[in-house]
Amino acid sequence: MAGMPAAPFSARLDAGVLARLKALSAREGVTASELAERLLDEGLRAAELPGIVFRPGPTGRRAGLLGGPDVWEIVRDVRAARAAGEKDPIAMVVGSTELGEDAVRLALAYYARYPGDVDRRIEAADELAAALAAAGE
Image (cartoon, rainbow, N blue to C red; front, side):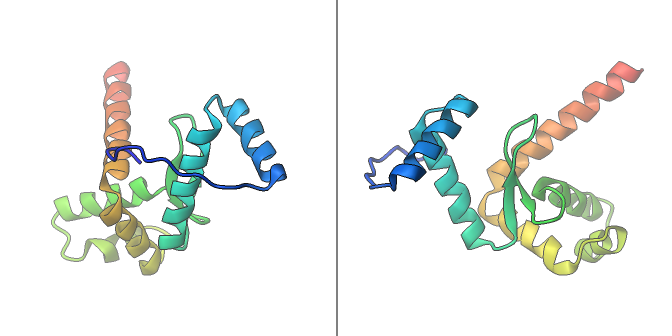
């Protein structure tokens, strides 16, 4: 989506699907075209990496594991384990959470394909943590 030029695409949609798309786009304050693009992109990402879901939140939509945490949280934890000198950061994250190795590897696979999305989330969380720490001092 981001970074690529827009290209026209035409599709015929069931009238009921189109009505639901328009209703949801109105509730979310975006055009039907913007919403359709986001839903297609998320659907394609979820199809590429089964077990990845997208959820809304106060800071926007983000990728997460089905029934688990957000991808950015797992990636952040793996990075922290690496920075701490862990020889096997994946095993460390598995051992310190209720996640299985497959779940951690799925989050890392998502990150490998879509690093910008994950990096932006981690940066935002780091900035919020710094602001909260400064406010508490």
